[in-house]
Every structure is written in structure tokens, then in C-alpha cells.
Image (cartoon, rainbow over all chains, first blue to last red; front, side):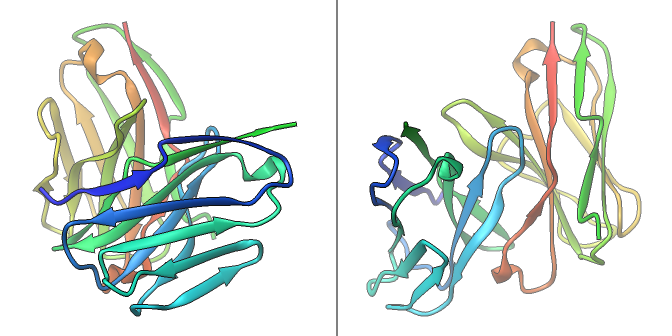
Length: 109
Length: 113
């Protein structure tokens, strides 16, 4: 079936650094979604993108809908300890949403 | 609003035992889903219910059954638990036009020994 490929799988960064991650697909998507999962909790929707080229921000988070419609990017500026977690990209596929395997973010003090 | 509520939060079963994981949503959503999450595997869809009265298999349905009891409730049953079913289980719901994404519960951590 269709897969979403996220990279990197894992990141170790210093507090205060900026973070970039991406999600790619072999097929075109009309919507891209970014979720964050904190330890012990379910994923929570951070940002939704609906138009190719769209750039949307949510506080220190900025996500972009790639112009090819086959990729999306998430950036976090000036990371803080509470940014720790797993970030998933997702998109509608048929009658359900499919998810990437996630990027796990670790922040070093 | 509570959103999506899952019970129990933690459960330990012996191999061969059965149990039902409960999920309820109070957002009047039409669609509900069950996922399992294992290290390095991401979220894998077990079963889903696009609307009340319908259920469909997802990516990993073997060993599970589901019941869409009404619009609010969607349960997941393990008839004979196996160690391979040790996982964290998440229920989610969405409205028609699910481009707006899913709302997830906080999960049930199941260990089968």
C-alpha cells in the first residue's frame, strides 16, 4: 500500500537549535497533516495543510506543503524541552488517513 | 469536552485470555478507528468504522474483532490474547471530510505474558 516516508527517524539536538524534518510520498496528496505525540499520550494534530506551496505556522512550528504535492516539511525554531516527542506526518488515502513512521525528537540539555 | 476516552489505560493479560478495549467519543464524529503502536513500526490500523453500522479491516486485523455499538462507541476485542499483541492501542475518531484529521484517545498499554 501507499507509504509516507519520514526522515530523519530520530534526532538529537541541543536546546535552542532549530529542527527540520520531512515527509515524502510516491503519490500526490491533497492534504498534509502533522501530528505530535508526547510520551504516554496519543498523537495531537499540530498543523493541517490544504494547498500546494502553502506555508502555515503554529507558534514556533512552521509546516510547508511541497509544490510537487508529494512532500511536506516541518520546522521547529528555537527548540525547548517540551518539544520532545514523536512527530508524524499523515495524509488522507481513500477512506482513511495514513501515517508515516514518525521522527523522534530528543533534546539535550 | 472529553474528546476520545479509552478504557482501561493499562492491562496485563495472560496468554489465551480475552478482553475488550473500550472507546467512546463525544464529538458526534461519524468515523472511528483502532490503531496499535509498536516501537519502530509507527501507527498501524487494525480496524475502522467509517459510519455507524459498518466496520472494515485495516492493515493488521488478525486476532482482533470490533463492534461499533452506536455512533459514540467502538470496541476492540482480543478473543485469545498472544504475546505478539503486546502493544499500545489507540482509538481515534473523525468527522465527515476527515481532511481535518483524527482526534486520538490517550491509549491503552496492553501487556500479554
